[in-house]
Image (cartoon, rainbow, N blue to C red):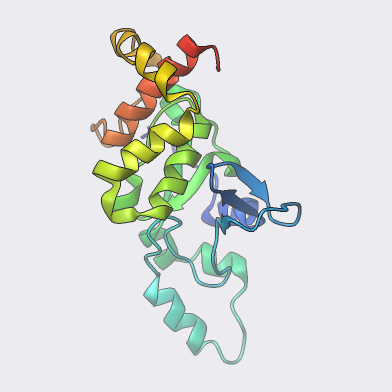
Length: 203
């Protein structure tokens, strides 16, 4: 978690990601360019802010939208509303402490619980793979999700297993960071995968 004030607004983050989806492999796709039916939109409903992982809704803003009979709220007003900002945190994809930029493409909007689960590393691809896996099964992340995360990250599991120990012994602390003083499970796994990628020559 960075120490500097974040200038990028919730609306700017929404506006950047509204046209993107994520496929089964955790790859980001443009919704109007995809030819794959197996994907999730990053944002389910433009007018109803919710956590992009677990789907927790902003009930206060939904009530205000229903009450707005004379003048509809704009998307900018909805996504920058104080109740939206209180529910959805701006989660860095690459942490500020690791060189992540203060720009819309480097943020996801997540509730506090989901924010604390996401990996804090230099590898954007692993962030998105983790997100896709979490969408598959939010409640099982400590078991099946971690195994699925590894399988989606590497096709050659046999080779992966051979270099796993070497990667663990050569972990580069410059490739990961903590969030709120805690190095969570996904960050531990993702930091290890970064080293495996290097050893396998895929990064």
